[in-house]
Image 1 (cartoon, rainbow, N blue to C red):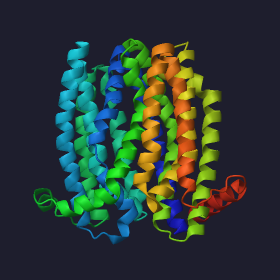
Image 2: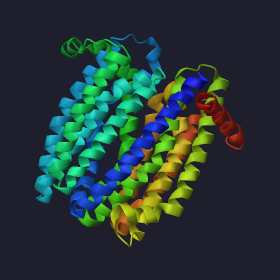
Image 3: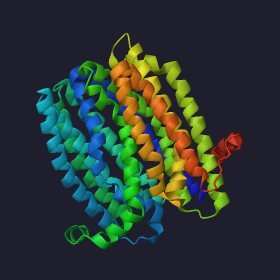
Image 4: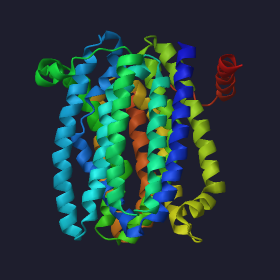
Length: 437
């Protein structure tokens, strides 16, 4: 399993490398070509989607835990539910677009909502296939389709030179949704060789199976994901009540750039879940999770060092501004908060979700963190503005880690974080050398 798992990790990093490069180029084009007010519109919509996201039910999350029990036709069940989600999300998005456009007297909100609807739709329509492929240690297929998606996005962004507006971004995202969806269908049929009776599953959806899965697992992992997404994106909602669009635009630049730091720890956290789903021994779970956590800490430390040394210079390139000190301050706070959670909290979450009680995780960790986040974002935005909200990211992350540690400790697992870093890196390098040399 070790080589297959490393294969998954390597292809995950390759995929994220594509994402980083395309994301950097995309941010460069969008931030420079659009008016800062238009970028503020994008930030507000993204923030409100943290609330709409509660209806984006991640039913397919159970695939990682129970993939060994599934036959091929099971995937059609999850894909059918994804289509239902897309229909519901369409109507919710329409309501959101009408409300925001009326509130701000700005028709561009329709295009911004349409764009994010297309992006979300593609993500959750492909999610069951991605999870199945990764669980079967075929993340190479995921990377290939992701490469198509990122390249297509970057190439089509060239149109901003001729049409620098949100309407063009909306048309671009709809086109990407169509092309990449076709690519996923080809992967499903030709590479994974999975046959799904999607139409039959859509018309005669198995509600008994659905209720069993959600009550046992999917409902709680979905609610956990919603709270997590809210914490990461809701800061722009609170800023939208008191700050001008330009300030929100600057803060959204920091969010967009800061999220790149999430790449490596997020990959390691997810692959930790994949590894644990294939392991039953208590000591082996501890060993695997400790190793993933240590490597994640190393990756986070390197990213944080890179941010402090090169972040201001990169922001100047992305924004085209000489003075980016304010945006850089936001970015540092956002990245510190992200890395704290992803390097320390994510491995513990993986263990609880695969081997523990996800309901207890939601009720005793995520619910308290949710209310603390609302309080910190509200007070900091009122009294300290955007700088206060940025600092609140760090406070929320620290509270999150403390609460999570107490819940994790109840399971009897221990993470060894005081030693073993050198051995982890050596083993990883050995596997990579055997694979490529």
